[in-house]
Length: 255
Length: 262
Ligand SMILES: Nc1ncnc2c1ncn2[C@@H]1O[C@H](COP(=O)(O)OP(=O)(O)OP(=O)(O)O)[C@@H](O)[C@H]1O
Ligand SMILES: [Mg+2]
Image (cartoon, rainbow over all chains, first blue to last red; front, side, top):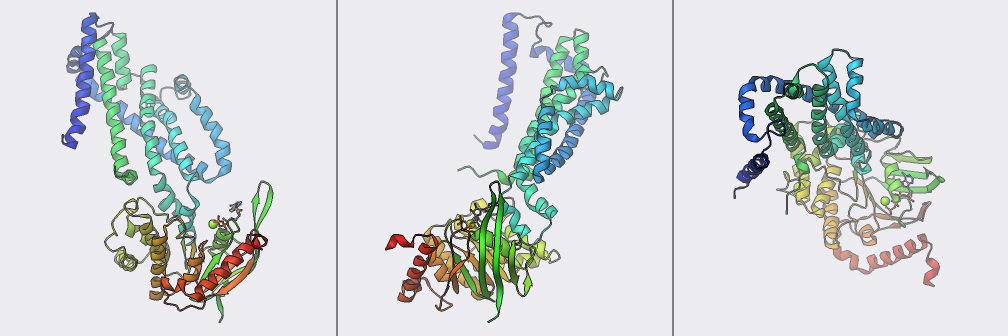
């Protein structure tokens, strides 16, 4: 089979198969909608609420992406600090690990109280808080494990620390950075939805899910879940595409 | 002749958890301009430390490293460095790797000029046609050739090499010795080569310096009076064989095992 065709056909078949099995299980068990909606109920939900899906989907998307962007900037800065200074590493690491260990759901009410009414801000903040950790760690480890020779080929010419970072350390850590970004994008997405579901500001796909629940519109809830999965896939593969562009060199030809 | 690189009574110790570790203790070295100095010594005696001092990456605790009449206190744009690991940047093509030092040393040099310079060197070491390949597409020997090009692309006046051929097989290594000889014939530069291969030191060196075990100082200096345009065959001539024996004995002494032989 053609390789490109295979890349499309195989995952599509998997998705169709998944939906078919889902439908089958619901039908065989004769579950009513309030137990579990089946895929055949979903088109109706999408047809009825498609406008909402677009506006809410957009809300979720931009907050996630913005939170992730902030996480990239802050995470990279933290990583740089930890990568270049041993003292900073020893000091910051336990703090970061501790912060990362806090279940983020507990932060939702904290943030809601801290910044009352700032729904957009809170959501973006949560997306950022939940996702910067893997970025900071990967950049920090990437920089601190840079082989001295890599530094020395430029340092021996009198290059500044910044030049060494820009020309050597940064590009060399890109593969690890994108590995972390793939984790971070999923986390940021979870963070956004967490706030959207828990805090009652009625925006985003999370809020749409919540409204499905309060109105007993079970097909809508499942339709939102599928939409979330789709959006998550889009975000993830956007990162993969960026990785191909900026760190494609790390991919060794298969032998 | 006045020496270009002059190392006088250099002392250096590393700070370790168990206190200072003296690595160099009164090391002397003199290399006239354009000459090739090969340095041999027991493993771990401080040879890489010496390269870091000459390149200005570190300063000695005591003593002085003088290059071209100036004391080396920090890195300078006129050195070239090559290591055992070719240290190719995987995200750059071969030619972009070779150009790298020019980006630091001559940031205003036009791109076309940089490329022409890199191409010239790459074709001299037999890498014509590989300019746009990725480092991972080249063999270890080819990568080391490219690494040599990068080390001299900015026409340094001194090239410092730390066991650059150490990881290569014998045939590739001998090939690279000849490449090295040809490069120096084309554009002369002063060389300091750290090696653990005595044949290499005799083939390439104008002088071979034997260091003692750690803490290292100069134990013996051998003048290699062989013709400049040597071929590998020269190593099998009685004169060279004699030098190799002599160096072998010196290394044994440096390792503190001279008694074993008697
Ligand atoms: N940054 C450092 N901190 C502490 N000790 C060091 C450091 N670098 C090297 N040493 C020690 O100094 C000694 C000399 O090291 P150096 O690398 O200069 O030796 P070398 O002659 O190049 O060894 P080799 O033949 O194995 O390449 C070694 O015992 C090493 O453990
Ligand atoms: Mg060494």
